[in-house]
Amino acid sequence: MTDYSDSNKPFFDNYDLKESNVEELKLGEIYPIYGMITEILEEDLENSSVVVKLLPDMVLNLHIDSQDKLNLIRDRAFEPGIFMTKITEKSNLNGTRSVLDFDTLEVVEEITSEDASNLVGHCKTIVFGKKQTEGVN
Image (cartoon, rainbow, N blue to C red):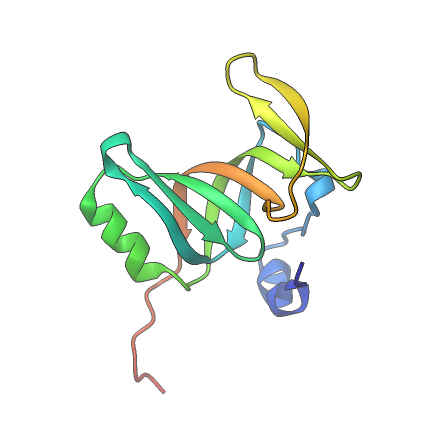
């Protein structure tokens, strides 16, 4: 996994934020995740679901219920944002994967595949910064 900590240092210092590693995050808890959308993996507006890949190594299920909101997500891809995310799956150091079972709200351990993302979560709120104007010196 790529280390982005040096490039985010001023952001974290300015807002007195702490960077966490995957092992510290708890399933079912909501965290502000700083990152950027790099790919839209799946779109299902009928079910208010859009799945995106977030740098550095996360997959998010976004609650998107309109074409306008989807267009905004497309427009703001590759821009940093804060994604208020409920963690639903994570990879563990021992090679297993912890998954939150939504029916029982219990954590289940599974064997992970090598192509699985480190984190998977559900996100209903995204905060993007002020839109950058092109050509400003």
